[in-house]
Image (tube, rainbow, N blue to C red; front, side, top):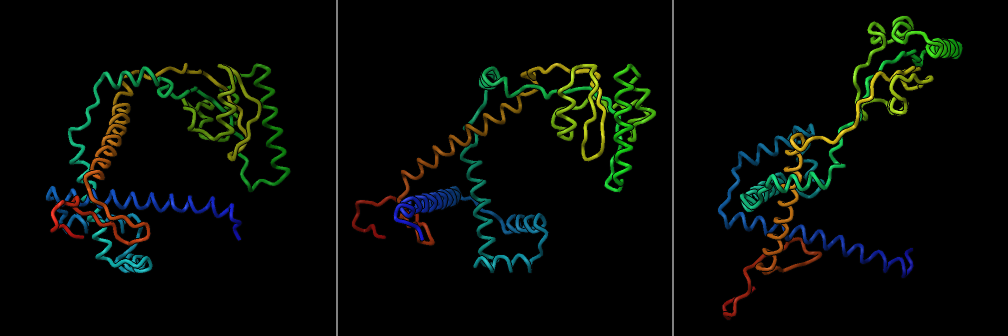
Length: 288
């Protein structure tokens, strides 16, 4: 059982959740109502296409969908009406925000200059490796032999043997024919153990044995490409999209708040419906 102090902590949290749910319902009703004022209609064909897309994405047929909805106390028609409302809300948002937001080059450049740390090029290195495969099918003695061979190869390379020639002889993957060449690789594109070892090496340096799920690697860094800030030209569209979405969200919230001020709301935390009415008039004819 919860103590009084525990209950005092839990109740506000529950009220906060309910209040947020209520706010969302109010926003939805306001937007749907605005759609009706604007004369927006969503054809049955469009609703059915949306339902078909949902069924396809979730790999369900009509029967399964109806059973799932029934468990939630909803009929297929009620579900379609919900979809219709969602499409309407999307249309209203687009209509209301149309032409309201314009991102200038100056705004984008200003953001770029202040946030250049967000546009650093991904670190890249040119690598070669020698791989000794260690499949699960190998027994203990076979693993010992492989590990010993890898250690011997490391010694040969450290003693001055040509990495490319050794790779062609010993490496057990497809890169062996090209002397272990893996090409240019970016951070975040490799196995963690391999990547950590590779990026810890200096240009021209050879690693000791690095073990991954594939087996035992000996890595050589051929070239380290300097990290640089991407040019404004390369990231301009990304910045414009980011700023546009931020401004749209800001103006949308402002619009919703204005709508709430002019709407007469009958709220209920536990009621199933949220009623939106015209602002009360002074006339005695006004009634609930």
